[in-house]
Length: 175
Image (cartoon, rainbow, N blue to C red; front, side):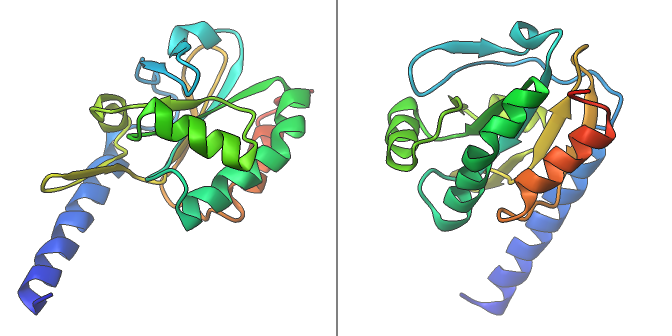
């Protein structure tokens, strides 16, 4: 890869991140969505009114960082359940890919397919590199009224689930 191409890609990523970071803020209404999970069930934001929701976006099923993050969430599902929090993963992969990923790693939470990237884009979490599109590794805590309680734009796959649980506790969730 040439230096000029690396520079251009770097600039594109920087502007993409800057635009996304400015797009949604804590306290704002979360963008609505209607997506199918790995089992064909439709999930809508309004389905979760009255409940806390963690919506996490990730780039690709069955890749190292995404697998680490998903398995960390999987291991913490009992804590999310005790707190009454719903956990949903979102990527641009199709439902078949999600189903295989969930089965392989025994993921017990829905993985939503955002094939066109519309929902990822609404959350400022779409990375477009020419014809290639991926969801960025971003997460959102959404409160009972559908407002953004916490926005995560810098996520570490290994520690993110613990970070979200700590933040949910600091928000008084599950008390």
